[in-house]
Length: 445
Ligand code: UGA
Image (spheres, rainbow, N blue to C red):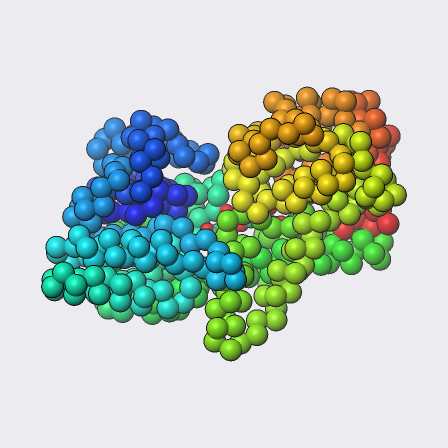
């Protein structure tokens, strides 16, 4: 099928590439000429495992093209995806300006019927707004062409985006007609083998499904962080509690890892946007507010532990802190809403210097923080601890999982490790002569 995709961010680029990989003829459109140029030369705008070779192969095969030409893009697709960003407005609601701008572009260049697909995470009611924007633009041109807008939310995870896209656990389609569902079924047929993964529903339910999924996951994390904070107070170890509850299939093992708070481009934004939507419909989403509040507090947890260890934030002045991990999670270079940003800001405010290492997010960190005297970007985890007083682990990259604690004890002048992802066995760290602080581990009392 001929597919056009507006927006070559995470969602658009990965979706376009995977659709091309299964044989569709895909054109990706972006307003950023540099990005489009880069993609045509095989330069990835993001780090995502497995993406570059797929883009290259499908581009070479002529099934995947990149352009800034919106007219060409609209003319190409029988299915046209909207996969542009929906950043947070000042008040936390999703800002729809880019989505609606694409809708107008589609209306401006449409000459034959198309199926328009909302792939971006958009508040309930957006498909209707997209429909109205396209209809208005068509009317202004005096053109009458049939089209329908469906909602097809994306559930991919950064770091595993290609895998999630190639092997989806469900494909949610919100549509107003059987024809639209049928077209989407044909499009997704290559991903829908063995058993039917398509869940067809009305448009509004599909739009809400995406927010419900992310809000549920964020709730699990905040819940566990709350339990961790209680565990710390009562002298229990949340890691034991996690093992004790995860085997109940109603609770499950996933997303019950306590840590330094959730970050990324989705959870913080989506939880906020869903409470906004609820508020706009005169419903006070108390649980969602609490999920957000717990997360906000949790992002300061590592600094709080450090201040406690040193006997006050002011005692961190002049310290050199090694930080392992800057990305909001492993296998990505994304630092949006990353807990590391809060921690680094707090350390600098306290007068400490940072020696940081992240396997992928170094360039992004430099872009965000610029050159500063109290910020050294290192090229290995070993280099980060050289001459440091303390070590803080913020992101659970695999390579941080089993350091040589004896070497750490020899290198870290203050002999202390703050483990923001509970990667280590406290007694193993302590046996090496280091003080250990984790999240929700009663020993931090
Ligand atoms: C999230 C969802 O997991 C995807 O299903 C969804 O499609 C995506 O948002 C989206 O809306 O586009 P993502 O933001 O890539 O994906 O990252 P996650 O793996 O969900 O992690 C989010 C944050 O939660 C990270 O900061 C991670 O460290 C944290 N987390 C996760 C925990 O603190 N504890 C856990 O147990 C799990």
